[in-house]
Amino acid sequence: METADEIVKKTDAALPRVEEPRASSEGRVEFFIDPIKEKKLLRKLDLAFTPIIMLLYLSCFLDRSNIGNVKVAGIIPDIHATSEQFSTAVSIFYASYVAFETPAPVLMKIVTPRIMLTVVCAIWSLTTIFTGLVSNIGGLYATRLVLGACEAGLFPCLNLYLTMVYKREEMAKRVSYLFVCAALSGAFGGLLAYALLQMNGVAGYAGWRWVYIIEGIFSILCVFVVWFGLPNDPSTSYFLTAEQKDIMTRRNEQRAQYMGNDHFEWKELQAAFADPKLYLSGVIQFCQDILLYGFSTFLPSILKAMNYNTLESNYLTIPVYLFGGLVFIFTAMISDKYGIRGPMVFLANFFGIAGYIVLITVKDNGIKYFATYLCAMAVYVGPGLNLTWLNVNVAPHYRRATAIGFQQSMGNSAGAVAGQIYRTAPYKLGNSFSLGALGLSQVFILVQYFYLKSKNVQKVKIASGAIPDNRRIKTGDEELDFVYHL
Image 1 (tube, rainbow, N blue to C red):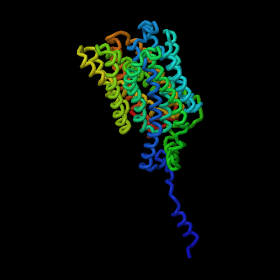
Image 2: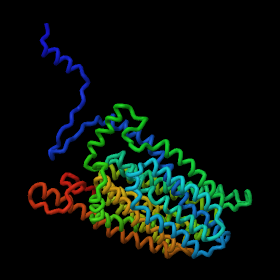
Image 3: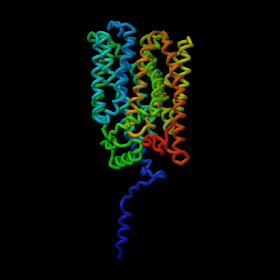
Image 4: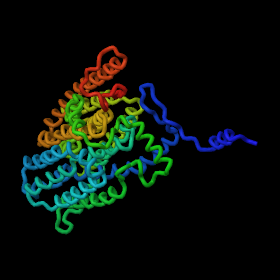
């Protein structure tokens, strides 16, 4: 006859075992997750969210950068504009873009990701269609301003959304997908623009008008994909099993320090604006975005200045953009694997420096075309990994939302500059300015690297009692066990 204790023990042994949370050496609770099941979960999350996010950003960047494709297709004389007015139209986009970029991620937390992303996508899609109907420069100014205001929050909001799904050490690869979309929009945009320009005269419209109208209609389709495909809370997504939802909960617990709570506090915004690494990152982003917007918008014009015709200057951009995107994915994977951010940007920029030197000094068009591939390595790796560098080093959630938005505002103001420096062929001013921006970026990358390294050393000394803790802010990423990625 079994005793009551023996029956209890047998019953307890038969029950499924759930790994209990355990305390770390710093006193923080750690949650065990089966690494095989976690990898399976990540694959499912990537398959579910990545195509939607990439499609949305591809649509956004197509609508934004197609102005470079239509420039070589006759938009300037058709709307009775001058080259200087057209350059202003390129730059004016960033006036509203920069103004709305900082509050957008914080607003997304209030109105929910689904509503925020769906509404802005719908408005910019209609605006793109209306751009195809403008008849004067004033109309182009107006549509560019509206487009800038709507697209302003997309990139920081998508980055913030990614932090709701992935851990710090998983971020660079996912951010790279967004910049691959920028590269694909350049490649696909050039090909699509060439195809749509063949509609010149259809229904009495010029080919460049069809570029805007068709691409705007494509963007409208993305509205429905976003509404039904991106949940407000990724951890409760319909496609996850009960076990995977439990793993997501445990991942959220592991990231509690990084994410913080959902309660809005003004002190987190103040902490973000008091953080030196925000401004260091913003200056780096500004320098890198000089390349991104100058290169992605004006590459067809740069190639046309090399005596390629309109068709060639569009389709020859395709392999350049694709190469830049592939290099970024490879670099991001290495960055995530080893937790290295700044040095990867620093290395990629040397290739960009070499490329711009060739564009400025060499006469042979074949060699200059090769140089565009070198430039592409810095064009996408620089802004993408620099943003990731900030992303993974700011916590909690609202502090990070503010930092991402403001850093992007600083960086994207470079778009206004790019429109002014790439005015006349052979674009030596634009290429020289981009070269100088890369040099300045290298300096600030070194400053930020050694600043973050010193912060990590300071935390170790405080934790060991070697020095007193006189810091004003001690929460979020300032906690002693939060190690900054270098």
